[in-house]
Image 1 (tube, rainbow, N blue to C red):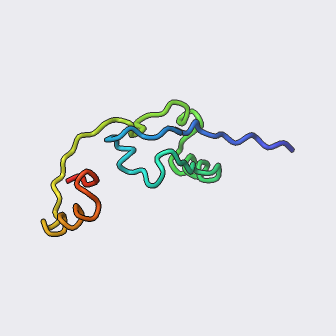
Image 2 (image 1 turned 60 degrees about the horizontal axis):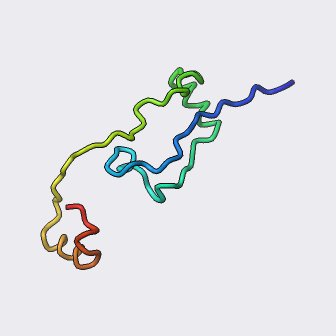
Length: 93
């Protein structure tokens, strides 16, 4: 009995561009990757009724740039403390 080879999607393995949705949600090293194992890929396919074909052409990868300004809700004294600790160039507020 031979097993059918498991499908492995062509995962994205490039650092996300700054100000992209993907960079917003990426934790840790921007060049580090931990892709789902084949069991999880199978579960996703089964749960959502997907096939290998659904993973061939990436869609909505999160590489699109966004431009959203959200004012900080921190009190000025806290922002000043962070500025003193890390420097103004390391804060995005």
